[in-house]
Image (cartoon, helix red, strand yellow):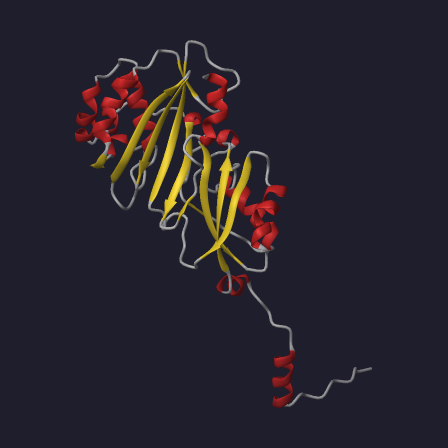
Length: 298
């Protein structure tokens, strides 16, 4: 027996059906209607293979994107102010992403922290102007490097400081750092040169101080090259240990040769501590993140 066919609908009926039908919304449609979010993230980089997403290994971006995709029920990709290497930490990394605006912004940090692993924490979240980019909108970035300067290493701080057993000459390091301040070609202090943009950067400030058994190096610039902070740190540590003269840094800049500069300092002592924008700065007050360590080793 043949089943009865429904009569063909007229053009006006088909038009009415299309108007009354539930709309199909794609992820692209959602993104076009999305808001832009800015999130400040803190993380212990010890167990991450860097920030940038890599499909086969654990990365900070991968952890954040999974958490955000779960909350917003939408595949979410993040942009970061700085792509930190494996083992490098962040006190105030900034990420941006696009997602729908239905999620209450005042609850975003709380919700993310409830599902993120303990070595990643969200400190602040805000909706911002649509043109904001954590990377492209940044005016300045600041890093700190921590050295435990005493004869014996620390079992407690081995993941968060670099150990140097030789007594460092802070004045010699400060003298050597002066030649690095300003606008220079930092090719000698670059791990892998960028494909675009060149190797000229403006280093605005370097601070070096001793706090008890801790030596802290602070760097602030418009931007940094791959492993630039760690190579500058390694070179200054060699000066502090008496292995290079303080006046060598100007010659190293002029050489434009990575082999001329010092060692690349280990990653565990390095912290992304601040990113500055026209109307926002992500970092804590000076020294705040160091206070527990200073109290322990001062």
